[in-house]
Image (cartoon, rainbow, N blue to C red; front, side, top):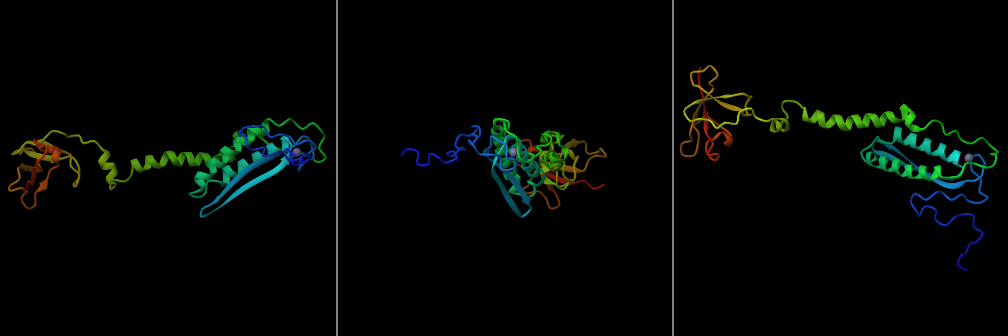
Length: 238
Ligand SMILES: [Zn+2]
C-alpha cells in the first residue's frame, strides 16, 4: 500500500538530491549499446541563434560510457553554439554548470559490467583537451576583458575618458596673472603663467556683478581661491 507500484522499474525522482549518483535501474540496459547497468541520465544543451534560441534536453537510460559520450557531445555543442544571443549569454553558462552536476553523477555510475550488444558511444577526448570546443569561450573571455579596456581607451570625443583623466594642474589661479590651458577647450587644465610669457592665453579676472565679460570663459570652480566663485578667463590677443 505504501508503495503503489512495487514492480515499477523507474526509481522515484532520482533527481531530488543534487549530486546524488544516478541509481542504476536493475535490469535496465543502456538504450544505445545494451550494456548493464544503466541509469536514466539527463544532459542539457543550449543553442543561441541571435534572436531565437533552442533549449535541448536528452534524457535516456544510459550506461556510463554512453552517458559520458552524450555529456561531452552536448557540452561541446553548447560551448560552440550556445553563446550567440543576448539571453543565451546567460543561459549557456547555466546549462554548462547544470551539466557538470550531471557529469559528477555519471562518473559515479558503475562501469558497464555486461557485454554490449552494440558498440557503445565513443566519449572521445575530455573537452578541456579539445581546443575547438573552447575557442568560443576564449573569444568571449577576450571580449569581456577587451570591451571595458576599449571603452576606457575610447576616442578623444568620449567625455567619460576626460572625466577620469586627472588634471595636471590643481593650483588656484591668481587674479591679475595669466593662465595657460594644457588641454583643448571645453576641457580645462589651467596653470598660472606670467602675462609676458609666450604661454599666456588668458588674463585671469574676477566676475563683475556675477558675470564674466562677453567673450570670456569661466574657469572651473577648483581654480578659484575661494572654491565658490568662478574666475573669468579673458583671451589674450597676440
Ligand atoms: Zn551504453
